[in-house]
Amino acid sequence: MDQGAGAGAGPQRARGRLGAPSSGMRAPGTPWARFSAWLECVCVVTFDLELGQALELVYPSDFQLTDKEKSSICYLSFPDSHSGCLGDTQFSFRIRQCGGQRCPGHAGEKPGDRGAPASLQREPAHYFGYVYFRQVKDSSVKRGYFQKSLVLLSRLPFVRLFQALLGLVAPEFFDKLAPCLEAVCNEIDQWPAPAPGRTLSLPVMGVVLQVHIPSRADTPESGPLEPSGHETLLPAPVVLPSVHELDLFRCFRPVLAHVQLLWELMLLGEPLLVLAPSPAVSSEMVLALTSCLQPLKFCCDYRPYFTIHDSEFKEFTTRTQAPPNVVLGVTNPFFIKTLQHWPHILRVGEPKMSGDLPKQVKLKKPSRLKTLDTKPGLYTAYTAHLHRDKALLRRLLKGLQKKRPSDVQTAVLRRHLLELTQSFIIPLTPPQIRPFRQDDFLQSLERSGPQLTCVLKGDWLGLYRRFFKSPHFDGWYRQRHREMTQKLEALHLEAICEANIEIWMKDKSEVEVVDLILKLRERLVRAQGHQLPVKEATLKRARLYIDTAIGSLPKDLQAVLCPP
Image 1 (cartoon, rainbow, N blue to C red):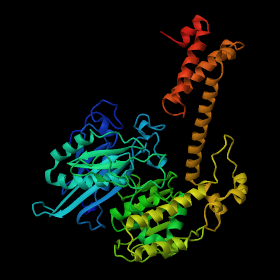
Image 2: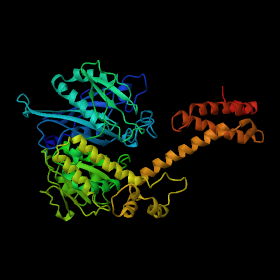
Image 3: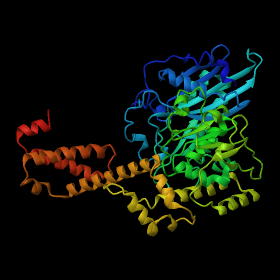
Image 4: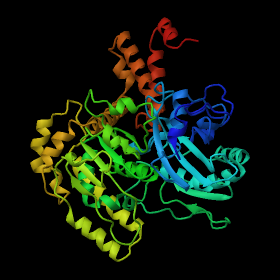
């Protein structure tokens, strides 16, 4: 596919009708409310010989995208000319929503996110695009090729689920086109909401996908889903082991020797360019890298697939300031020249799926970069703080020799990364309400550091010092501070509700009573919005206390506090 051919004209507006704005989750009971809990919209992008990439269809038709968003979707839905993608290919991208947050209620945690792990909550200001691209020879077309992409636009990072959905829908759509798409969207509009902790059956095109929506309460040991309650269903449900986890071992095969170094780069939020042979390899590598830190949320920007046509190209490639904290997946070698000032560049080749471990990319100095013919390698001057875990590599190599399934190898790798992240985070105990003091923390590491839970040796102190300067420390600290503040507010509310309010009010002025009423009301609103972890009995008692306190005030004040 040649993006350059249509670059002059640029991507075109959707030919489908675009109605009133309806971005974001729709109110319950309104058209497409259930659909919008999963997807924002479905797009069809085609290649027009005269117009270049064109947005042929947006469904539901009243979902509104800005011209900049349409342009990004068009360019990112097709592999560029450096990826000889014939046949069918799947990949993903992530774009910034224009004009900031358009989703109502996105400032805090959305109702659908309550209980979801931080890394799997809805994106408030970005869209994920999940793409199924087909390019096949077609003599009836001027250009000689049929080129079309079906794109699912969502705020949910459920790459495994949406790839499976596209695998079912796209081949059928390319044969039957719009009517098939409308039927599928109507089926999705019947799906239950993706509530954390629930196992759901999602019917589509005669198949039932069975998925578990992860929750914070899930344990790492939670195994794959067991079909339940569907024994009488024919056909049997297709059980997806995860809605979001990729085959980490397959993604990391060429870089297994450097997994720990890459984990450190992700932990520190370092800028990293990933140059891959195709959007599929690029997007999977970037998503695998950004998932390394779980259960920590990846707080930096990342783009699984990025092109020179992206609206943020200038922002990311400027040399007037330090490289941004972003992981960028690309396929165009032009980026090697444009971003050769970046501190870390990972070049990976075509994936080899033989039984042996593929040739591992070598660590190379950035000065070895060649702008035109860069060989696979990790080009960086960074020195890892922690010693490499040779036992992990030996275990994975042994698994290859014994022909262990890839999902077993992935489980080994994922557990290693999880234990590494947890060992690093455990000493960072929930922050006190007083400011976090780095020096006090570093002094505490001798008696309660990661050495208690991790056998790896190395410069842990140096790693922590760099971590404190990264966006991930800020993200972690804000999350933990918010959780602790909420817990203290909940305990305070419970303490007030356990006291005898009538005795408390005896010697209090009207101003103090009114102040208590207003504070109780504010806490009640937060608790009812599930922002405070309190029991229903406490809420009932708080309402009773508010009524009692109001009743003790003069009529004129009661009228102000409870207007008719």
